[in-house]
Image (cartoon, rainbow, N blue to C red; front, side, top):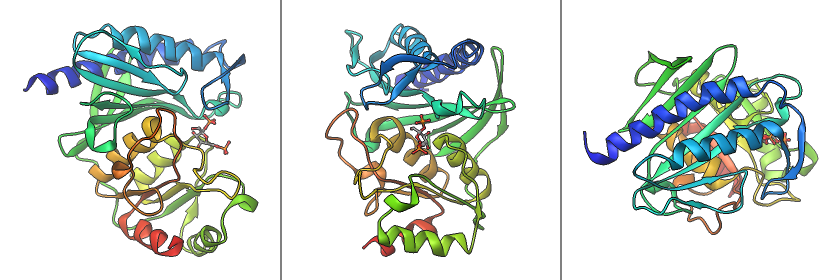
Length: 284
Ligand code: FDP
């Protein structure tokens, strides 16, 4: 194992252990915190708790140079050389109130942040569903684990998107979709089954399991959509492409987009390659 591989494994292991604490820490924290994150969204107490926990745990690793999160404006500089870790501590926090699925998303980069997707060495997510799972892409393969306390058990090696797609989920309000996207969405509605949970990570996971497409598109009142390149677009693009699918911002892979700002948003489309190719043609 190289130094980078071993440091990456330590980081993944630390996130897996933190996930169990985050899960337990949700109790009593499903209420808003009277604060906004750098994207102007109201934070839940759970968002702040998970961010602080991950900042403490990850910045203490010898070899992690930077920690950044969707929930804080500035990068934490750990004062050493090494890898950079960018996280969305709780994705889908508006699902907290109704006690529906949420997740933690992470990307480990070998460049200072903000960094492009091609600087990722590993990316993954934790899904807090009926049980807690962790999906990690590294070294050209995707692995799914079940997490229980401090145990991490492999349940699927070499996860790939099924060839036959079956589900779709599209975010944003229909009146705010562009005409081209609306036309494409209408076609897809006739071919696949709707799965939309309100948490990007749950919808992406469903696409990874069943095949299909998830989009949070460019909107007429928000041309960059809602999701953030550094914390959501890059890691999910990396996982989906490693699993044999495609990611896109509408014209190219999310991994090819150069970040302009740590919290920059991007139109977000992921899924089976054929469906993303068709989408890009529809948006041309
Ligand atoms: P949330 O605001 O609940 O944290 O990244 C943010 C996100 O959820 C995604 O998980 C989800 O797909 C999207 O926003 C939902 O946005 P809408 O509120 O526009 O449906």
